[in-house]
Image 1 (tube, helix red, strand yellow):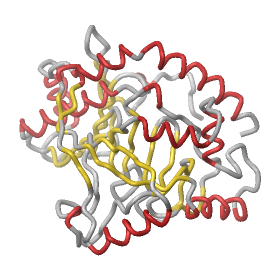
Image 2 (tube, rainbow, N blue to C red):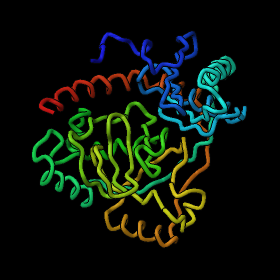
Image 3 (cartoon, rainbow, N blue to C red):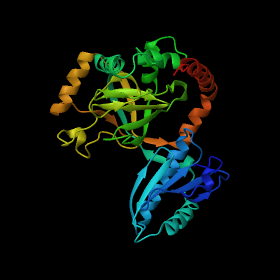
Image 4 (spheres, rainbow, N blue to C red):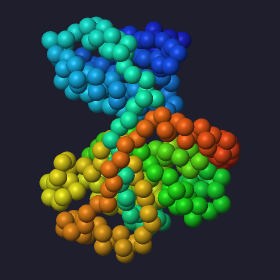
Length: 330
């Protein structure tokens, strides 16, 4: 029988920890099977500083070339490390990681390459509406997010109508802080402007079908579906293909997936017919994705969020109250 009084720090999965101190988040090291170690930073909150702390750790591990470390897989506030236990024992790895923590720079000093990627999106499109209709017929006929996911997102955020949802999604760039958010390079992205950071709970239960290229919101994150698949994000529109298995077109020359960590997506609305034309052209190799090189500065971003804190706080308070009302009977 599970002892619910045991804290995470007392868990048998715990390999070590570092307490929070001035300027640095706490760290927890967890066993993940016999060949993986999970490094978690801070509390389970949305904080770009924690993502960049994991980035700094990954960079230092790669620079150090630690013998026995095979691979690193970053998450939103974590880093999963695959290691060879016949070469490097877990205890030694934790000791090395703790030593690295003492030399990592402050996350506020981070500057990372960050492309601006312009993506067309058809809002309230027939493909995502068809996925919602299939869900109503085959999974759940009634739910707070039915029959219209975009209208549910509007209510969850205290907005007047679905047009405001589409407006908010275009007002702020969204940054990709995770890739492979289930499979095939699916992005886990978050709005950089807290005044327009839409939130909505996911489906319960999930859909059995989502159209490829569907754009959805789940929690505070946005996602693009790289293939037809199950899913639980609230669907608001459809965009370009983001996966190309054979890397047959120029936008996929580096990898089968379209995005890189810390890319910033800027959506702009198009009609369904325009989107179809662009999707077909992209598959032929006749359409080139519009991107702009750039750098993201954590210090500049924190200065920006400080400037808009009051306005963002008012939106967050309205959003919190609205979500409570919208999820009754969930």
